[in-house]
Length: 227
Ligand SMILES: [Zn+2]
Image (tube, rainbow, N blue to C red; front, side, top):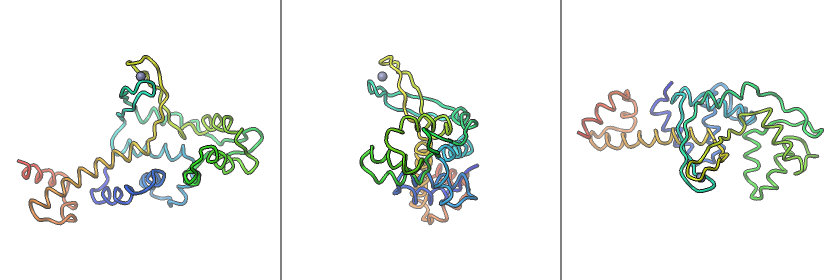
């Protein structure tokens, strides 16, 4: 699967000014074209992440290389992952059921968008718990809710445990497939903009004409422009 040049650029343009939650929904809509954005906003985050991991497999393949800074010493930690390994726990996803006597459901993109408006993390957590477990839920429920969520919807939060050779400590770092995939697509869109820029300047063609060229021919002309 490859996205057409035109589609990639319009997606990038509509996503680059948006909140990361909305960007993730844009990607989710590419992964699940038969559902409306409204429906997708109400799906559990684990389902969203699984769909994005499968989209990543189709667009760029199985292997995924990234890096983050060690939270203990700041050393850059590089890692390589396989999408399939991150997807595996999704097979055991199931309804959340009751937590401390309250019937709960996993958080969705819409829940995240609602709590993103709040600056106070405690208030945000309370609102999230109330949305997912009902009005009686209070802040004390948070640890039990998080544990139950991890068991029921394991792809809701993909964290990686990495060892740091520089300081010898290990670190659990969050991995956000929506952010990762967005950055990969944004890099591809920027490369494409550079190509349009060079070809338009050299030949006077319009953006639409350049984007309509098959990739092989675009590359062949670029080679000549840059020769
Ligand atoms: Zn370290």
